[in-house]
Structure formats: structure tokens, C-alpha cells
Image 1 (cartoon, rainbow, N blue to C red):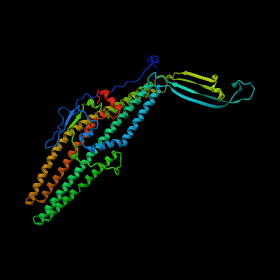
Image 2: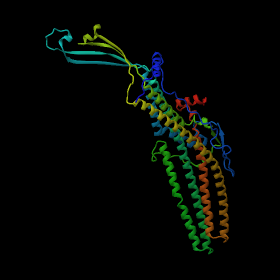
Image 3: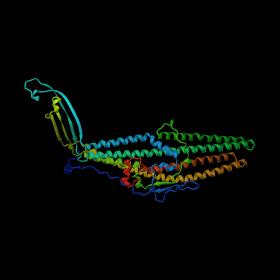
Image 4: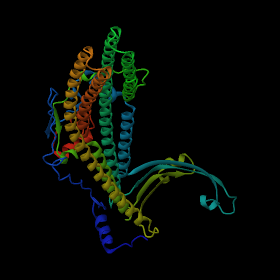
Length: 505
């Protein structure tokens, strides 16, 4: 059951009716406090990104600035071109832009309630009625006559308790949510484009590595056949070398398939079908590992990551919805006015005596709705609590993503150093085994084992290099991608960041 009108509510009613600005009932939104932590991972656990053995070093830079076009940090002209094509041609971004435009029109629609609503009407009717209605003599036959009328009508409902203001606030928050969702979609798109380009480069390098392995296998097979011709080895050694070559040839189709999948995915990201667009021939050697990786503190991250800002805007909308539900429990004061003319003929419509007008005011106050209004308000409060929990979860997931990526970069550096050493050692071992095989000191199985070790080391090293590039891109995306520094980005989103952080990038 709805709560009865209390004395406090009656006093509030009197105050707000007498006030020109009215009163906005319901809670005023306050932005959630940023995380109090200053680090993403425990103190002293910052990973080292400086591997040895000739591998490039990186460094995490606290409070560093991420450029708007963050993918250019990899210094690949081909990558820059593909990412731009993805931004220009992505259907996902087109859908997000249209959704944002729709949300902004909803704001304009909500603001319309601030102004009087003016309509124009005209009517014509044919009636039959009592003769005295027309001033005719009694006793005559009921006449048939026409009534014509026209004129404007004006209606207005003062926003005494802030119902309109809260509805506008809600729609503005939803529009802000869509603006940040657009930036999140752009960030995801660019991150996926970079990831697929790296996947293509990795597959291309692995194909080259497998072809190098096949060349070594063919070289071993030729050596075994030479030894067999001289009578120094048996036929089984030749068969073992041929088997090794066949097994290694089976490594090539899966890698080529990964290359095709990455190419097709990149074509789709640019808004094209795989049949009409071929991406550039990306190679790992064409990517530069960013030497400096900017890392902002958590309190700044929550004011920059678009997914967190979108969750915050959704929370704001939920807060405004509580105000809407609360305002609907208070009276409304509809006003209306009309002026026009009415007559029995077109000629009479333009005579002064035909002018009619009306002015009306009213009061509509909820008394009993079976508890529906109170339930609506409580439901809005619970929706706000759910949005707050989702916001907190979004922040925690973001902090966890950054922490995971930072740790991964440290492990990537260690892995790259180890894989580089493994390649060098495996090559030396293979050359030694070839010399020993020619001297008859080892059998073909030892030679094949050495070749297989080189194969595994090469593929592992390629994967380690690609993983460092991938995780570097992932960290830049996790930091927000620098969208707030883009002059072409959403103006509303940039203004929100400047207002809350004091930055004007």
C-alpha cells in the first residue's frame, strides 16, 4: 500500500509550489570514490622487462601519457593503415554511433517537457438538435446544422517536484553511457585489429621457421643418403630420416590455417569480406616493441577506461530513475489554455462574437495505487544497488586485467630470453651431431633428435616474440588506449574526463 501523505510531504508541497525553481526529490548522484590502492600488484613485485641475450628491453612508466593512436607505438606503417581502415569501415562502430545518436535524441525529447506544449486543432460537425439551441421558435421541427471551430491549445505542467528534471538527468546519463560504449567499442576494435595483425606476423614467422626446419631435414636426408651410398649406414637410417621429413611437413598446414584465420578476421574487422580484401604481409620484424609502457595509477584509470565510465554513467541513470519514481509519488499541477472561434458557418468564424477561450488549472495527487508507486520506488532503489555492484565489479575486473598483463609482460621477457638461448644452443647441438654423424660416432636417431630440438626452439622463440607484442598491446588497451587525447573522439566524454581529473590533453 502507498504511504499516506505525511505532514513533511505537505510542507514540502507548500514550499515547492511557492518556489519558482521547484524541488527535485530523490537522491543527487555522487560519483563513486576511486580505488584507494596505489598499485596494481603487491609492492616489490613489479616485473623486470629487461631480458638478456640481446632481447629488447621495456620499462613501465608510471603516470605516463598514452597517445590517442596508441597502435603507432609499434612503428608499423602497415598496421597504422589497417587500424584506420578498421575504424572507418567497422559496422560495429557504425551501430554504436547510431545508438549514441538515438540516445541524444531521447535527451532532446525529455527536455521538451520543460516547455509548454502548443497544438492547433480544427473541427467540423453536423448535428441535429433542439430548436431552442439556435434561438428558433418553439414547436418547429428539430433543425440540422453544422458547427465549425478552430484554434490553438496550450498545455503545461510545472516541474514542481523535479519529475522532468530527473527524467532529463536519466536520459543524459544514458546518452553518456552510450558515448562511453562507443569509445569502448573503438578501443576493442583497435585492440582486436592489432592482435590479429600480430597473429598474422607470428604465423608468417612460424611458416618460415617450419620451412627452415624442412630445409634442415632435407639436408639431413641428403647426408644420410650419402652415407648409405658409401655403405656406412643401413637402409633403416634412410627411412628414419625420410620419416622425420614427412612428420615435419605435417607441421605446415596448421600454421597456414592460423594465418588464414587471422587474415579473414582482420578483413571482417575492416568491414570487408575476406574475398574482397587482402591484408598486408605482416612480419614480426616489422613491429617495434614499445620501449616505454605508460601505466597510470588506479585512481586515474577509473576516470579513463571507457568501460568503467560507461558503468558509472549507467549507475547515474539508475540514481536518476530513483528520483523519477519518487517524483511520481507527489502531486502534479497541469495547466491548459485555449483560444479560438466557433460558429455555424465559415463566415461566423471570423466575427468577434465567435471568439471563445478557456483557462484551466488542476491538481492531481496520488492517493491509493495498491502499493504500486511505493513498489516502483523500491524497485528503482534495488536497481541502483545492482548497478553499483556491477560498477564495482567492472573496476575490479579492470584492476585485475592490468595486474595480469603486467605480470605477463615480466614472464614474457623471461620466456623470450630462454627461448633465444634454446635456439642458439639447439643450433650448436645440431651442427655438432652432423659432424659426429659424418664421423660415424652417432646414429641417425641422435641426428633427428637434434633437428627436432631446433624445430621446437625456433617455433617457441617466434611465439615468445609475438606474445611480448600482444601483451604490450593488451596493456595499452587495459590502460584505456588514450582515447581522451583524440581530438576526433567524443566531445562529451573528453569533457567528463577533464572535469573529473583536471586534465586537458
